[in-house]
Image (cartoon, rainbow, N blue to C red):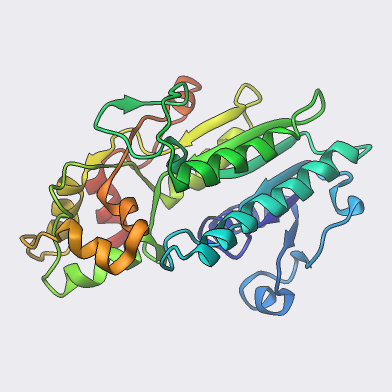
Length: 298
């Protein structure tokens, strides 16, 4: 099987490549820095720094995970443009080549995020939900998904990964949250009622492989655990797992001073349910936030 991956050195991409390696799969990774990527990826992986139609022909699956991290820097106008272009441009290019290819991939998996829903209350929402809140994350993901879906045809199935908060001890959101808790100054954010739709990295990878092997799955698919929790419960479980107190509350105005508009990622949430995965028989390994934290932090 031939698989082309963009974003192969990222949190999800790196874990996915490890899972695929040794499975009779020929992996090609598109990366901006071939030299840097070669130090973190196995020698049997083909690395390219630009795309051509030849790179698309005869690929069985293309998995598009490229994108500037959305929460690494304050959202200046320049950073917003970088976040958008890093997702949209490569997706448009891939879609154009898929449309032109004589032998296009049978599956195109493209990234997105639950940020497409925008800020929501505690109401449970799934892939059928359409009352999106119009803010920056919705704008980024909505346009990103639009470009990806243009690749859909009778030859190519398109699946969109609406990913939640990915938990991994090696990076991502958890690595940013952990330090204050380890110092004993962790706690809930603002009122703590905002819902956090999380997922363990192992379940992310399992879900991608499940989508690959389940022809019935297409369109937008929520990649979140089946039991989201409030920020208050999330932070309490994190503190308990590492045997630290959890009594500090971070006020909303402090986050707005520190992060500006990006603070909204922390102050608002979505109660997202992975209905498509569940209806098609996917089984999560980590169904509670406690089980995820114990695996990652004990």
